[in-house]
Image 1 (cartoon, rainbow over the protein chains, first blue to last red):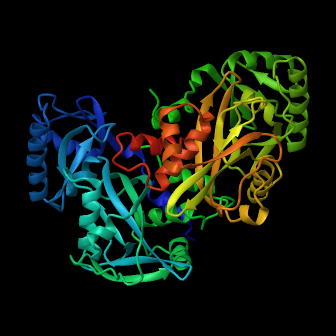
Image 2 (cartoon, chains in turn orange, red; image 1 turned 135 degrees about the vertical axis):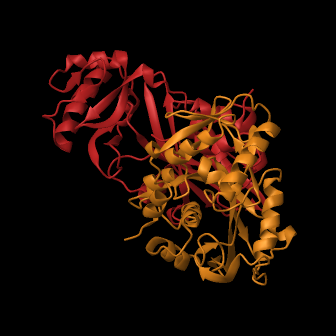
Image 3 (cartoon, rainbow over the protein chains, first blue to last red; image 1 turned 180 degrees about the vertical axis):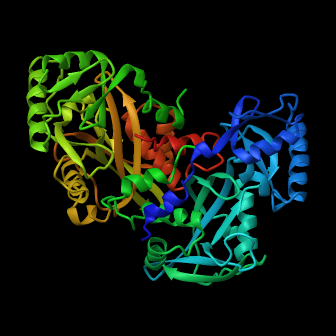
Length: 284
Length: 284
């Protein structure tokens, strides 16, 4: 039996005992599975591995030196098939503040090191004569992750070196052919955080959320092959699909639950309300 | 120098070392200052007081028995002037779930026992030809707390035994003369949590938030003397007052910051964004 809350719990299933912390310059930036941590002993000039923690060697003390050392390690792990996938997009690795970037890391390796990742998700809605409808994408069957699952209209990771607004406009064009001047009208409405344990490792994630009201004559069309079809469904139908099924990519459920809460579709006397609202912003 | 974040920190200033936990039936329901906890030794049949914790005596095992025993103690403490104020409104005392009420307690004693309290705050807004304005109240100079401070259009505690929607409509009429059918159109948009240490004790608070768009011809008018004047100000002016001053009652700043985030007035590239958004929903 699914429920809104069960999706939130699915995205916050991590058992930190399965991991050991990863420190850079004394700052905890991630978490590694124990067997992955042991593997890093192959690079004794890069990592100090103990049963309690992994530390990046302190002689790597600049963004450039850390990035280069990590890149070399990740490239070999991809060659060895330990990390299956070189994504080709750099994520910033940060401590407490998002502004303080300690190094960058390929997105394909982020979960292995359990570093915090940032993404952007946009709810595309249409006011159809007073009935609110939402554009929902179906991910391509050929996508390497979550193929065929339902998705928010626009969703993407935030790579290093591009601003939130530029990246949203770029993703809006690539994923849905939304004209840049229209996409720029999207309203930022907060963020959702969750911490998910996956077969790859740990995914502590921050999703910046946006709402964009589209005119009736703008039909999203995928440009980059990541989405195979778009549907325009009444919000009530979308809510029922989230509540009762696992049709959506796991974290996209949370974006829609947040939307339903902010817009009053989930009322505060819902028995899970306190737990749901708290569960959409877990401390990372 | 004030900032949005400084208000959030002001409302989350508690040092738990100044308190000891208060347990009922093995469930932690509150926190007490150490000197207040020691005072409860006067009622050895009601409280088990140790340096580490205070426990309600387990022979008090029903809602009615606990409520009666607590009421007797609080009445004496009010007589003695230890608790200065009998509010006359019962708050439910709950553990993890809001539905599981262990006993009820006068609102005037809530901070002394550090129990979680629930309230409702409503942002009243007017769309004035495309410019968004917000109704702001000034609290009566004769009010016992935060007199003369700025306040949200409607704000009130949620007493025991009344539903969220009934209480909002009641408060809307008492505080601002908002017609019930209009107030019923308020959109619930989530909640804010904070944990504030005050001279009285600890205030872990959950504020359910609402947005209500008012027609231009509805002018709020206080019925119960709690508000001395209402102002209709552009949202930008309200934002500046929150950001730069301490004019607002402390927790009302948070309600407006939450509004500014949900409506995109505070953009996600604000340097304090991550900390602000997380700080509006601290785990209680």
